[in-house]
Length: 412
Image 1 (cartoon, rainbow, N blue to C red):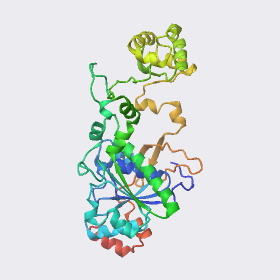
Image 2 (cartoon, rainbow, N blue to C red):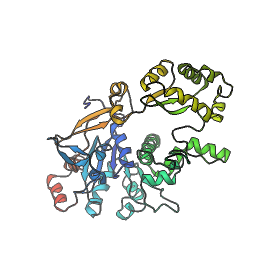
Image 3 (cartoon, rainbow, N blue to C red):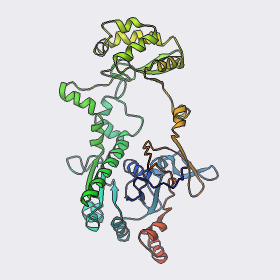
Image 4 (cartoon, rainbow, N blue to C red):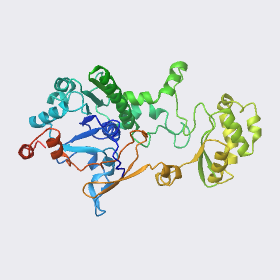
């Protein structure tokens, strides 16, 4: 764990995190990694839904399974966990107190839910006019679908990504396919991070907070931008290409003597070098294939010839030769192989952390490599309610007796 005492880029920011599951927590983990103080509010005794989304489970100090999932660990490091029952008036009052001292509030409840508790933007901006308040929902705060619930796979379907993901229709295994990760959630978390940083920058100039309405549907549709803008121009509906590319050839895996290798030839010069490695300079000289448009128009004929050559040698031999000639390529790794890659090891993409109870968990390093204010990995994913007393006393100035009363009343 990195314990260098360097202030993070957002060390002056306090975030009140009322979100759970993935999109919201992914956003707040980004902010926490950059040094923000993130106070994660969880339900007493239950916590974030994803604490129970196992196995696998975080390891306890003795190596046995804890009661918290690794899924939870993947999105909640560097945060403080406090339990509050917001259904109780006392819990609502505590959240309003925390909002008064915070810079950012993020929540992902159904449209209108927090208004019932007096915890919506209108209410909290009265308490703190400088607050940046971000809501994450499936469909947004308005419109005919705004009331609907939904999970990531629904938005991958509704937002069009599944229509262009998967093997081509008519081929074995053809048909729509979701991505292997919850990309709508992750993408919304990333866009939410950007939106919050923009709002904080605006506030630094104007002194004004603002409300941010984030929707998984909006974000997943935006992800298809390069496909959709082409559709707007041509009227041709984008389709599935399997592991191929609609406008770049070759750009796909090829079978070798011992497995598959990805080749991604992005321009005519790379294609010439690729053909040289194959020993098929005739392909680069052929008018049908010399230019990118010709390779797209004659893809089946070209790919058949390339595949026959690629199958004659082992994958690593091809990778070595292609890399030596600056042709983009790579082996198709599983996640064990990913973390055996020398470059992945060099970039230290695995972060091992120890929890306050001695339990161990490995997480993935943030890709945000700020040189002056480097990412810190100071806090392992917290135990449920681990920081309740500390936050109530240090942030809100509660006495021991007041904390005890809140606990006796089931508020925390």
